[in-house]
Length: 115
Image 1 (spheres, helix red, strand yellow):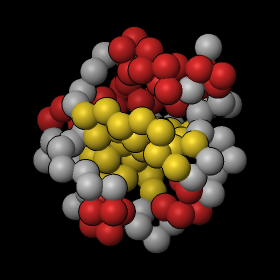
Image 2 (cartoon, helix red, strand yellow):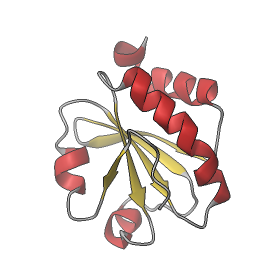
Image 3 (tube, rainbow, N blue to C red):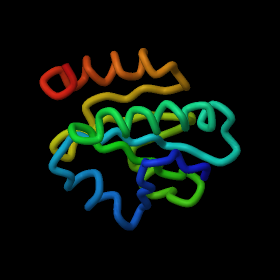
Image 4 (cartoon, rainbow, N blue to C red):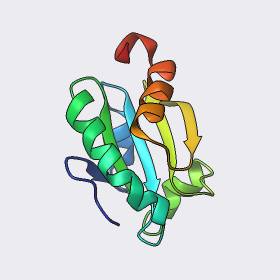
């Protein structure tokens, strides 16, 4: 997996702790090394983590090495982004997008956090 700078990597083993049990909302990118659009999202996620890291945790999960979580959330396309709040997915988005659009969608899903 091509890791975005400043963005933590989660696995099947620590997903429950790092995402489900997180105190703040979490954006998970389901990604893969072989996925060109996933690589395009690296700088976007790095910027988002740097700008919103106090209010939003940003993590990546490699779908090839973490099939349990990938299957549990029925992820079929990469990149897939899921926003988790209080341990539950509250928004799912598929496909690469510019930073502005991603932020708008996140703000829509988490209006009291990112507005």
